[in-house]
Figure 1 (tube, rainbow, N blue to C red):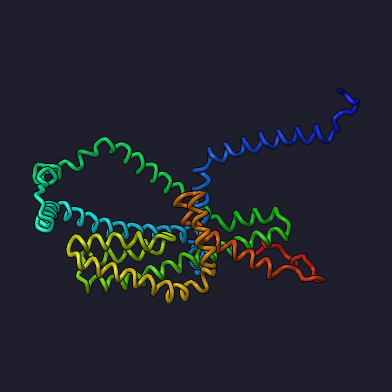
Figure 2: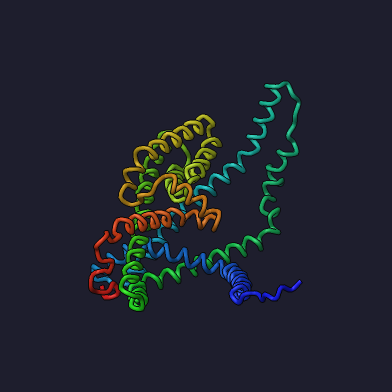
Length: 362
């Protein structure tokens, strides 16, 4: 029954705004999903620029033009990456060839061991034929012929993304100061100061992350290289570089991923050596966690261990492997900014306004 009371106007407006807001959120979610790849590329480019900017700034202070300094930085990164993949790739190719050549012997040894130990009468003739001349060893690549197109597409897509990241990073490095001056000039002095603080913190923390990881990677590579030589492990240089780089630049699980390859390579040549290699990797990891890492990262990546672990999990859940790589610099920047903001809040009776001048003028 109608009691004569009309719906209040604010209720009607709230309903309209509710549905308009829902439609706007739905549309924005679709836009973000459509542009997710571009957003990830931009985010990666930004943090690569953070990592390289200190080096470019130092070259600029020494009189080198910023564009040329950026090109030098890119050339150095490309040379290091190419050297890493060349050395490790050569070792992998050599060990793969060795494995294929030795597989028939391994099959014979496994067959004899099972028969002698357990009194069995097993034969691996079919499996052995897969790896003898004229058998499966010669057809390994042909079996994956159907996947060649997919692999090629993945490689092309990866190269395109790397080129896009390099292009955006180059622009952010070469034109970064000019871009920031134009942006900061449109902000109020307080907001420009806040943006400058955030930018500097992100650059310092990301640069500190790369610096600390590089130092730890060099130490790890040298220690494992010496250990691998003493243990007579094949390809000691390549495997040591692999352990040093992967253990430091893959968050959370890098040490475990890095240890798999040298242990497998050692087991192929001498099982007992593989056990010693595993012991060396585990012992060094403990020494690094409790002795080396805290000292190296004390002034570069001041971040709580629990926060670091949680940020890696969150980054992986949000953006996969890219999020895992970016998680620690982002968490360190956020922690440093919050700490700085809390330390510099105006006390009662103090002025909240910054000193005269504008960050864009510096």
